[in-house]
Image 1 (cartoon, rainbow, N blue to C red):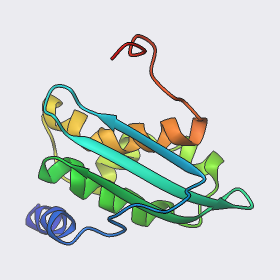
Image 2: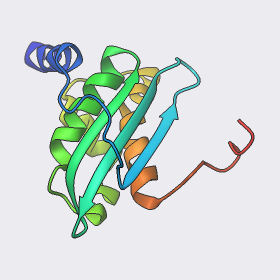
Image 3: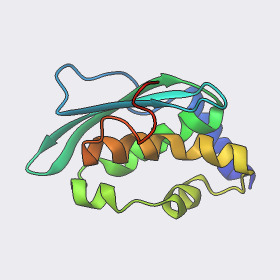
Image 4: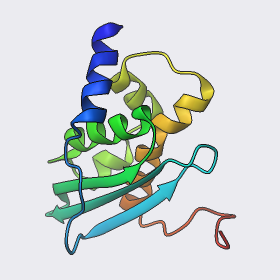
Length: 129
């Protein structure tokens, strides 16, 4: 388990693909109101494949490290492949057990990515937030 913890810490301290893209094809941002984590993901898409990705935001080690790891995984994938990513894929990527609150942190980047891939502007019930 220490190897996974070290990898998470490394992604938190030295995130891959951190920043924003000028003129992204897809950009989406969400926050986790329970803890205050906020993630934005920008994508450049060519021929239905993710050519370039950046993420930005703030949050705990789990949310930022997961965003970093996820951005590494999706370069070159099609939007259809991204739409098929699941909670289990993220949990396998992390490699350590998490409690319910931390699972929400880990899934924030996936929620942002999938919302962007599907073109969702807001989740039902959040229109006035």
